[in-house]
Length: 392
Image 1 (tube, one colour):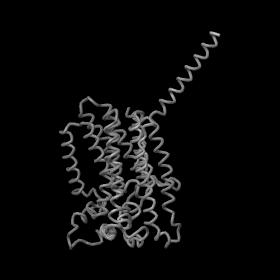
Image 2 (spheres, helix red, strand yellow):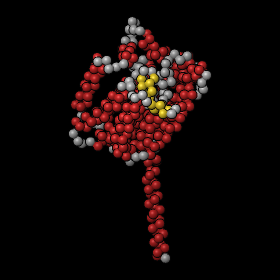
Image 3 (tube, one colour):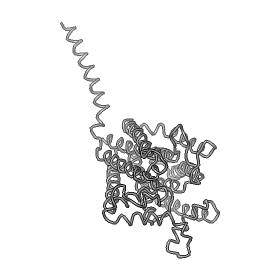
Image 4 (cartoon, helix red, strand yellow):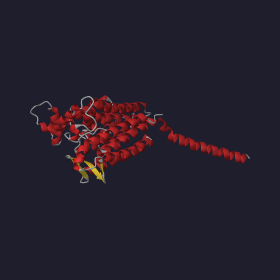
């Protein structure tokens, strides 16, 4: 009897241990942030409708299926949700061990895109075609730089700042330079902004930040004076700087002017879904990618545009909250970096749509057409969830 009692007790203890392990494994799920996920899905749903509206007339004229772009974006959405789950489930602290692998993998893709394997479109060589999917390595590089620099700053906390800052700068400038060669000025700006925010959140001394600011200004001067920018990039920047000049060639501001007309014609309530004339007649180039906000403004007006911006503000709010609640510096840096990239891309994209920023080719997160961008942003949302679920 005593032997049987002992065996029962041992089996009970083993069951309790197994149950405890399962409880520990699934405990983070109890702290999921549903607002974050639902907001991202809401923006994506709006994006799908806007993409359909933007290309509806053009696809019908070409005799192509009206859902061509939407179906591709839906496939990217499914992959994005899978990536979100994976990014949320794997403990974010383990990413520090794989940061170097992710970084060099992203560099390999950035190099490949500059070879004959890369696909050029609109004067830029930014994509690698894999079957029926176009991979944009610069989107992956942003995530790799975020994780790598955040891990480096976290590991070097408390040590002399000069090597930490220097190596972080090198880690950022190498992929940024490769992206600049594509050429992609807009994404290059995102790298600079991301590094600045990581330094600020990581408590890098002000003297280093000031020095980097001066170096950045010097780099801009050199880029303009030494013809490092392509002619079309110079034309865009010049057209923006001379917006009120009557002698300016109007063709240089055609895209911006048509965008302003489309958004302005929507007024307060908009013309209605699928009723936008600028959209239907394709007066705004790339109105399904970089200029998707013009479709929102024309068809849903000021109120619709305000709702979109409010959804982005909710994402930024939740991201900042996660950064504050994080249990370690690495989690804070990751969350802050995601918020920084989101805020900058929304500001630049909406700004160039309404004419207060130069056209730099940055898509609107979750809303613009682009499979790689959508997948990456869902992965970043998963990263935010990861930090949030493990804040205890």
